[in-house]
Structure formats: structure tokens, C-alpha cells
Image 1 (cartoon, rainbow, N blue to C red):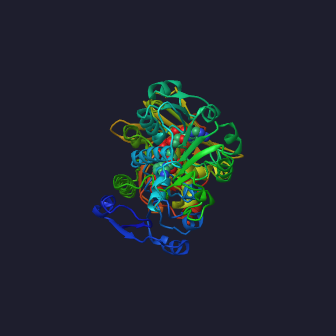
Image 2 (image 1 turned 135 degrees about the vertical axis):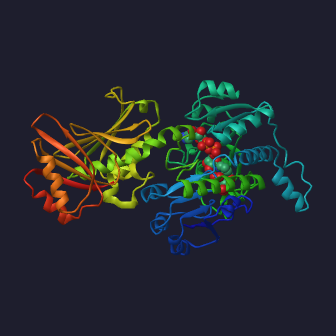
Image 3 (image 1 turned 30 degrees about the horizontal axis):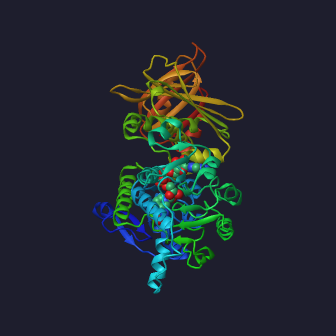
Length: 528
Ligand code: NAD
Ligand code: MLT
């Protein structure tokens, strides 16, 4: 199969080599498409690669019937509707590391330009003015730089600013004292940072919690003559409040690489002499553009051909060592889920997944998603996948519980799935037998030993002499070959189940006819 990849924003030609060099990938570059044009085209493609210009909206995603992956050559994914992507089962990957250095260097360039008014002085000189009085700056040495957001870029900026002999105070919800000490920075609350700093630089994502994080109230608490830098995302600093704070003299200057609305060619902040700005250039270096395009191209190739991605945004990433250990259980977990859906009629309200034995030492969340996929796939079809399985279960009001248990029932590993509807609870357990592969070892109260593959028939019957022979003859009469048979019972003479592996899928009419036999209480056919 050939996968079609659309690149809708300009990306480094060297960076997309991994896509060009892959045998089964066709790359189309079409930049500057209008939203309508993209909506019309997207149905042909398995992958879409963007920077920040293309807005990947719900409308576009809903028309992308073949789309499997959206690659963002950069960090911020605020131009992609992540919940729509998750809902439609489209994985979103980004390139989180490739432009860290460039963005940090750009921030430092803005910090120094802001302190020394270099852009203003240059502009004046270009206009024929040798004006030394207006462009007196301030030193960085001994000043306090407040860093809001100590992730990849924030930490790099702090390290560089220390080289300018600045004192650093930082806030990040994940910044511990140990890490702050290691980085050689003070740490406090966001308010501590705002109050103490001569310069404040923001490096958070733009999310609900950070939208207008620096607002009118925050400006009121700052030192007089504070200077601000935003090379992260427009909207973290409230632009209206910043304008007023500059006008009032509270803020001595601001350096902005990003704006709430981009492109921002006609912005009133740009009219202020205290403001210097660049048109979202933080990651615009040859190196960063090549790095992010390489990273995201590799992930697209990997995902389309092997189904794994290194930097997923809407799916937790699983380290390779862990993936190698849990991969053998993937098949088993999905088949246990599928087996149970055949046994369960009625609306599933709760799914309980229990891991025991050596499985308790592993990261099992991907197996849980895979089990849910197996459970819901029969009704939702190929629409459900690892990306949206948990989301779709939640949307349907199904409660999913995952637990690790110490009881193994003598198996080295055991995975048990239980589903509850309003009226019934059904359960199934499976194990991976060393050298023999996956086995179903328990169905409800019955102990069995069944390979979870092919066409299975589950027959509930009474444990009476002759039943097994009769069932065998019934299938023979209908010319259906039985490849394997397993019988499990709770008590002698009580209820029992028989699980047959047969060579064909039973048609509805055949199931109906077999259900007529008095020996059979209930026959369920399934295809795993
Ligand atoms: P990152 O994920 O490594 O770091 C972001 C940090 O923000 C995290 O440590 C997180 O804990 C912290 N954070 C979240 N909410 C916070 C809050 N309320 N207060 C304080 N901290 C909070 O991301 P990064 O790679 O360092 O990128 C940072 C930002 O820079 C992103 O918005 C990214 O899109 C942007 N960026 C811009 C450019 C550009 O061209 N200007 C280039 C690259 C990245
Ligand atoms: C990012 O989030 O990576 C930056 O905004 C850079 C870009 O525009 O791609």
C-alpha cells in the first residue's frame, strides 16, 4: 500500500528526506491552501504535516476519512483541534526538541535587544538620526530575570541568562526545589516571580490556565520599569493590559515574537516605541527547521508503517523498552475484549481490567486501551483505535477501571477482563504461555484452555453424558468441521460450557438452527 502525505506549510526540504526516501510514501506539497481547499483535498491523505500556519480544525478533521496522523513540525499544537483528532482516531505528533535551542537563543537576543534598545536605535539610524540620548539602555548584570515556565526552552533561557550574570527566579508547576537547585535558580510562586523581577520571560504553552496569565492584576504587582518578553505564545500576556501598562509607564518595554492574532502587521502595540517585535521567528533557523522536519517525518513514517510514534501528543508515549515487554500481550488483550462483546448483550456500563503476575511490573495503560478497542470494535468498527478507545468509552458513559492484583492463579501472567451491564456481569481471563502463545484460561466460572483465534463457538449446556457426542454429530450433519473442542464445567452435572474452534464462520441461519437443539441452552458464534 502507498500512503499519501500532504505537507501544507513550508517545511525544510532536507528535513522531509525520511518521507521522500520511504518506499511506500507519496509526498505532496501544497502550501497556502484555503480552509475550504484543504477540506476538499484532505480525504485523499493518510498523513498531514503542518507548521503553525495551517489551522487543522474540526471541520477539516471530520472530512479526513483516511487520515491517520497529523505531524506538527514544531512544539505548540494550538493550531490543531486535538479533541477532534482524538475523537476521529487521528494521532497528533510534534517535534518537541528540535527547536528548543533556536527559541532559547531568540529569547536571549530579544532580552538583550530590549535592554539596549538595539532595534529602535537601528531604525533611527536607518532614518538618518544619530540619536544617542533616546537609546540609553540598562545592564543585565545583577538584574533579576523571572522565568514563567521552566520546561525545555525556559530552562535553556535561564542557563544562558546566568551567563549574563543575572539572578534567576522561576515558576513552573513541575519545578521542584531539587531541580531548581540543580539549575541554580530560585523558585517561588508565579506571584513571587512577578513581584521580584526586572525582566519577565514567559515559556508556557497557551492553555486555559495560561491565557492572560500576565494580566492587569499581575502588572499592578510588578516592579516599576519592568520589561517583558514573550517568545512562547500570543495570549499568555494580555495585550490590552500590556498596552495600558506601557502607556502608564509601569512597563518600560516589551519584546514580542508572538501575538494573539497572527500575522499581526497592524497591531497597536507595534505603534509604541517601547515595543520591539519579530514575526514569530523563534524557531526560524536553518537548524531548527531541519531538526523539526526530520523528527516529525520520522514519526510519520514510523506510524504509517509500524503503528508506533515517538512523540504523540494525544496519546501517552510508551518508552521502547516498555513497549517491547508489553507488545506480546497486545493480541491477547484485544481478543479478550472482542470475545467478551460476543458474550455480552445489553449496554456495557463498566469494564474492569485486572493485571496480575509479571504484568503488574509493566506499564499497562496501552493494554487497557487495546482491550477497550477489542470490546468496542465490534460495534464501532474501524473507527475505534488506540488513540480514541478511552475517549469513546468515556463518551459512552462506560466506567473503565484498571487494577493490578497479586493473585495469579498459578499463571506467571494473567489478564482478566470483566464487563458489567445493567443485568449481567461476564468475565474472561487470558495468559501468555511461554513458547505456546496466548490462551483463554477462564470464561466466567469455567476453566478452559482455548487459543483466542479464528472461528469460535461457545455453547452453554448441561453437563450430561452424551451431550458432547450429540453436538459433534449436529455439526457433522451440517458439514462443519470441528478443529478443537474444550469443555469446562462448574460442578458435576451442573452448567457447563463447550468452546469449539471450527473451520468456518457460522451464518445466522445456522446459529438459529443449532440453538433449536434441546441440549443447547445458548450458542454464540464469534470470529476473533
Ligand atoms: P515545554 O513543554 O518543555 O515547557 C512548557 C512548561 O510550561 C512546562 O514545564 C509546564 O510545566 C509549564 N507550565 C504549564 N502551565 C504553566 C503555568 N500555568 N505556569 C507556569 N508554567 C507552566 O515547552 P517548550 O518546548 O519549552 O515551549 C514553550 C513554549 O514556547 C510553547 O508555548 C511553545 O509553543 C513555544 N515555542 C515558541 C517558539 C517560537 O517560534 N516563538 C518556538 C518553540 C516553542
Ligand atoms: C513552535 O511551537 O514550535 C513554534 O511556534 C515554531 C513554529 O512556528 O513552528
